[in-house]
Image 1 (cartoon, each protein chain N blue to C red):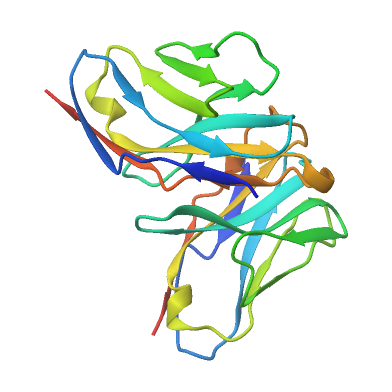
Image 2 (cartoon, chains in turn green, yellow; image 1 turned 30 degrees about the vertical axis):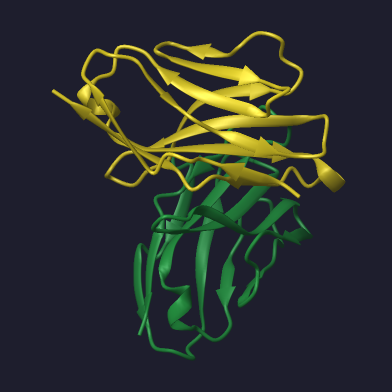
Length: 113
Length: 116
């Protein structure tokens, strides 16, 4: 049971570099989302998707892009990394519906120098 | 706009006692779902309990119960008979269906310390 797989687990970038955080799920979930977790601020929603080809912005979308070409994959792109994007990033998936809990990946710890 | 407020950054409880973690929310939707998740020091997110906005009875899952007061827009988590393994961060979350998006947002969390 792979569930939600995030890669890489750790990454260090220099300011201005770009990179893509990968997220894949094997549960055929329609709904996927990206969060960042910072101390004292909980999990903040970056972008989310309700199905292939459909994405929308969350609470803190600036500096991040997403696309959803398949049901399984939902990559998060940092276009030009900034120190303020140093955080732990979580990808989550669920079936649509109010009562469907999200399944989370193990997170990616990202440091921007 | 959606908003989740958890006013207790940290809480202490004696082992075997009950503890209540507070959560208030703000939404203009009539249909929504409320969740609690646990995050141990290892970092994974664990789903604990769910309450739907139209559910008349409070949700319960083992030692976890959700004290849902719709008029006050509160969804407090009650943990009975606390165990040392309950020491963790706890997050309240809300899902709305505005625009069909099923957007889910989280509160800032409460760190629970269980004392032996």
